Image 1: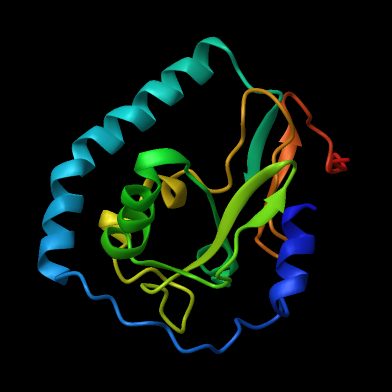
Image 2: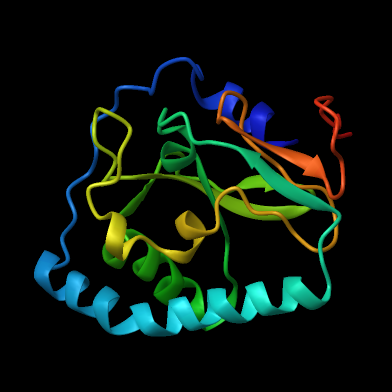
Length: 174
């Protein structure tokens, strides 16, 4: 099951599903403080990833621009953790970052379990209400990995382009 199949099973892509967003029980100023304290480490991690991509360039590059549809904020796949840290990981994503589960049960994607989540900070105009403190998954979207094929949502505005490709033709992914 790929990303677009998951989204089609949840809702229509042309408009964001209208659902009641569950209230966050964690104290909002405290989660903002935590995100502010973690931000330098997030930025350092992103810098290290960029340095690594300079030395080992991925086969694809990101092209295009954001259309501000909000689909990448509403359909977020978070890998399910195991063991003792599963509850802490779920707390981190739901109460600190502000994501909420769209489906209670995890989805099976390429043999791994993921939670399908949405973001409570997505405004009606498709912009982020906490852009400066957004999590790493949002800062790196769409993710272009060094190995494997990138996955981009339909209608996103971004598309993967083969490195060094100069023609207007797009590379169609498997």
